[in-house]
Length: 254
Picture 1 (cartoon, rainbow, N blue to C red):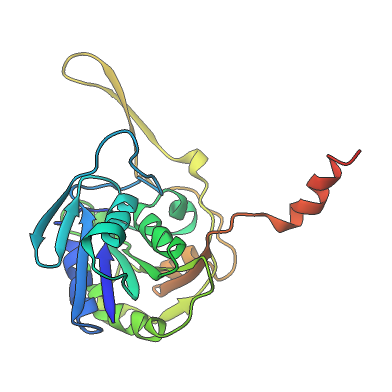
Picture 2: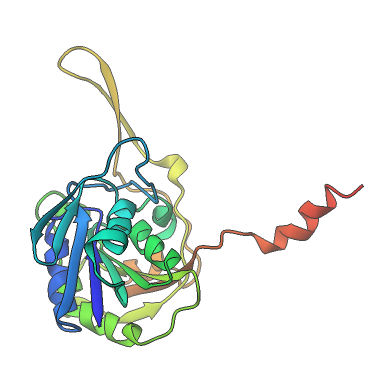
């Protein structure tokens, strides 16, 4: 089985080495093609207004000066001789829960793989406010990653779907188990905005990472992570709200 590893934290991020070790338990044919620098929050963006450059670091290790979507595209079209059987994106430093998936470069890389018809899985390590900075522990992902992935590697995925996995902010021995759940909801309208002035006297704004209000329903990814479980959520690329098709069509009938 050929595995492509990518991420949105960059080619040198700690999480990508964690994922490389996890993948090594599944295959010895592993390729890494990831952004040269951090691309958190890049979403499913594609670079169109400047050239994309790729650098080879080892036989099967490349960095791309672009977004996670660019990295997957370059892997499939240039770096790899044959398409992979599986794409793993992560392990992201931080949660990708609820509405995070619409902003996440980690999830976007898996989306690009799904669009290409390749089984794709995004993996993220949630961390607590106390561990912000360089002290984020990937122990839960390191200990449980293989257990989460093994049932998925041979499982057929529905067309244009991907799997989103989040590990709770715990040591591996404290994780309670794995739960398959639906996507929750964050209320980003109440997120923080930090305003200050730079050394030259110009104002600037920085989106904060303060706690965000959310309204989890029963058995959502937000809820099970808070309860100490790993969340496994199937996502689809078809955004169509089918329940609105009939009522919307009525508005255009003569």
